[in-house]
Image (cartoon, rainbow, N blue to C red; front, side):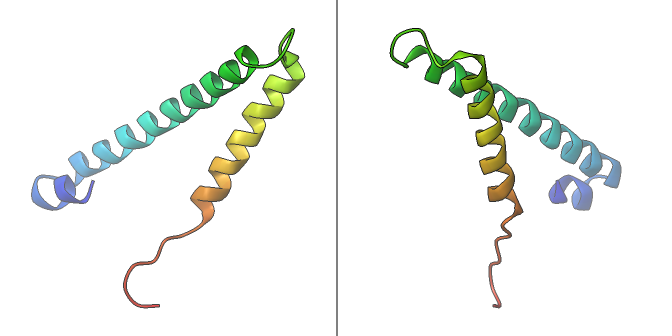
Length: 77
């Protein structure tokens, strides 16, 4: 979003950032839900049940949140 902001228009940089954020939110929700469904399909017997699917979804959201809270520094330490 820095390139459109710098070289074209600040409004285009803002729109690019919002579009990127929205796409990441939607794709993360889709990936998490599909992981819970896959875990239900590969479980033994009758599946993991609703509580198991909820636990998987919440667990993956927490892992994602924690990984995004860790900052990455490049350069000076």
